[in-house]
Length: 453
Image 1 (cartoon, rainbow, N blue to C red):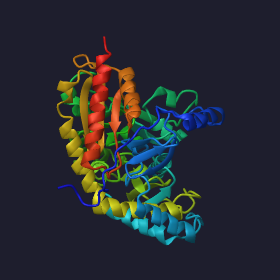
Image 2: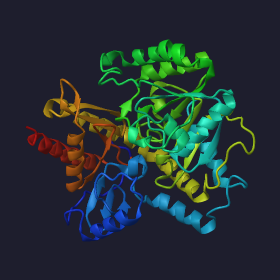
Image 3: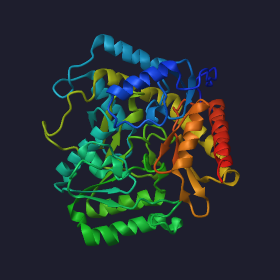
Image 4: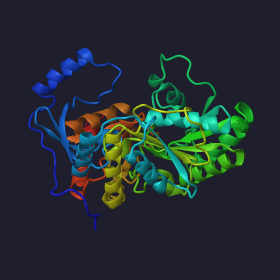
């Protein structure tokens, strides 16, 4: 039986005007004139309101949301309990700055995050406004605590766009191009790709190959491990193609970190907060990171990021790091309501619906010649699109056509990496909505395939 607390009645999309409609076109023209051109928009959705799993555009079309604001609105759009918490707090106190003063909610949320984070050691929590800010804080904390200055991240990683986080990011060159010298002392290693193989060969040996590279190549030839402060890892790469790190790789990485006194930093900004069917993706491997970064799903759309670290690691002194807006009372209230909902209903639902989707797509490689791989955990699922299943040739153009077609049919999805479709709906999704999304996506794949020479 599905977990309780999932929205009823079932809501499905309806396209009344071919998007973009007249009001959407007016907004798009204004946007083109005044808004930064650095933003990437896959299709012309101009959102007016959201409720549950549905988003309504400015022309009255409704869409089924399988993107969740890039895995942010974990409890769906405008969940009544989250809205009530925001409204109540906004009427009482909006800002004082947790850097200089105290909030009850700030301490309560820190206590809650500490209690649900992996590991038995006591934790302490730092609050910022976003995932990138959480990564920046983790970089500073790792250097401060270890008195070392080198960092390791992985190919395909996305840790943010601010200068320190960007130095760890190795997802797309366009994200780094034009910004000059980034943070010194950052090294990148291959991420274990169990579909393609870490070097394009031997996918079944991906974990062993990558762990070997760290110790036998990187630490022997490029950087002494005793100078490395931290290794940053996304347990599931968010912008690198929704690639899960294998259990044996995460466990091996933890052993390497313990061996050399390196801090293990889990970037759970996208894969955390229940999305994989557990609070944290690292829990699937039984790994206990020294530092954990979270954001996105923590507050159902309100801007909040957090760093959870072992108390013995978060030993910096007053003034070492802070944020004026970090841990804003309204965002804290939203987070406390979100965590309560996730705990009561929606983490279990993520596990249940994830199994349903993976089960329904298990034969798509046999049924669709452009589907190379289906992978993921919970409601963080990637479908890799290829031009040829044998050669595994990447096909970003075909992936993009699927995304566009889905939008025209009322389904919101996004790409990830070079050639992968990502499915990351709100954790409230029910079986009928998941079924509609899969039927729609199935039809889009068939339509794209029919146009291939």
